[in-house]
Image (cartoon, rainbow, N blue to C red; front, top):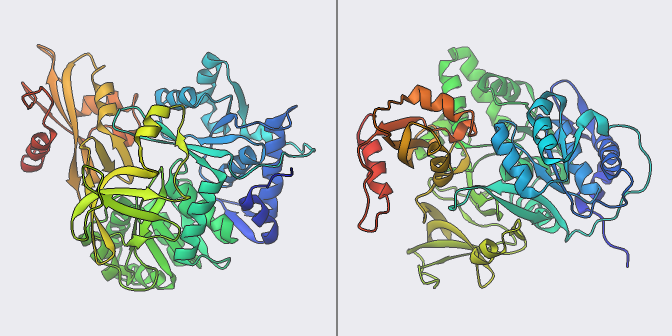
Length: 501
């Protein structure tokens, strides 16, 4: 029986000469994306007919090369494992090992960070420029129900877990957002988000490419450059995390009055601006509206489910709320016993539908534990009032949302305990208007040892992604514990909130 091809790739054939991706210096059409991703796929295949869901980990700068790599992996029948460009080697190695990647691809600027890892593991290593030869031959046809991508997300057990999505679940996420937010080929979006995270991969890049829209990708976020693009480009969409909006507001406030007027007026051409990946402070929403006239659209989602809830494209957006169910997504709130709660009562968010991930990579027990009667248990607590939802926080105290990232406190603690001066530690997130939450560490030091915040951060940046390194610390004689010996993190968090440490 003839199996289907990947719908995203098939749709690109319809857009042909339309502009797909705009990079720093070059513009690429959909036709070029199809042609180059085919060369990538054939180079990955080498003598094989189908990669058969082999994992291909890749590290590239943000831009066209990322899209070509991702599509090339998919068209070869592989599972894409995008790596984070700011991860230190230890975290890159963890993802490559955990995914059991058989191929690792790096852009030349990242080669030194990955070649040693691949040599140690005996993995096939390729540079992106080695995949662009004009190879010819047939590509496998891919059943959309096959695994397509593994995205790593921090969990309460400490180490990140790989959430596996199929081509169908990605398609469901994309088509849900396109229906809700009315994407069209006329749209033009500026992309400033990381490309190892569902927000940047699905909500921005893949929605744009599915729609036939234009996506301009910046290699890194810079507030002045973004304001310049907002003024100069005929943009219609923008999506970011609250921290980015805080930085854009700060840049606006520092600008002279004439420049402020140009900046504010330029935002009038946008039909939609979205904030997500962390709670949006009402003060930021109100300040952004005062500056730009735009009411940011808040939504709710996570790596395992894509997006589940959204404020309306048209209609009232309530500050502090994340809206209602997106098309094709079922949401319910349940109590601690798993029973649905009435409207107005708080409960854990559970999600069901085609957007939900397939499994945690090679973690069958954790996958099983994550579902209840077919509903994915998010671990987030919310209240529903008049059909719209307000997020209250995590059931677990060990997930910190900082700068749009979800970070596991247990993972950070595990690394901190390897420091020779640290005897014991506990990590908490403390609310912060710029970052959502700041990572704060309470330490018990070995006898006679001293450790400054500067020294801890310098040490931590060699072992953790920068956004995981604590930005505040306090040294204690003892950690607060309950009668069972468990650290009482709410009391620690209160200490950071009420004292300057």
